[in-house]
Image (tube, rainbow, N blue to C red; front, side, top):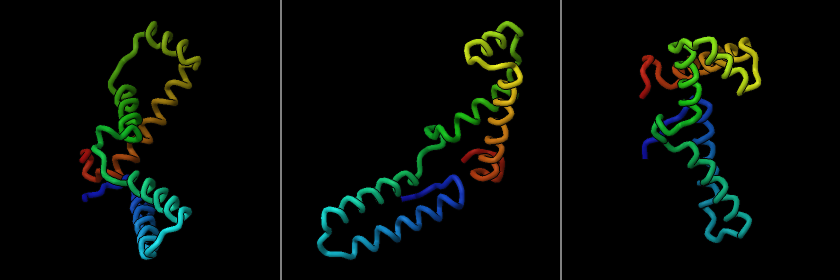
Length: 118
């Protein structure tokens, strides 16, 4: 099974979980507590199994907000409506666009060093 990680720390965590599973599997008869613990480890490990980038909200949400902030021009009335509906000032919304762009740039640098998503 091919695995993809958002960053090296996730890869280290997945490897640690795999080692932890192997320790539990060595026992012939798992007590209920051990079986529950093993199930918990498996669930956490499966969270690291590859998912297409398209289905990953942790990638797509910052990307979407970053692209909107970079490529869309809001007419004043639309921006005012956005401010009103979010109960935020223009400066706060612009700060959200900046934060999303910074998050997206970090994600791109970590997941796609060539600058192109995998």
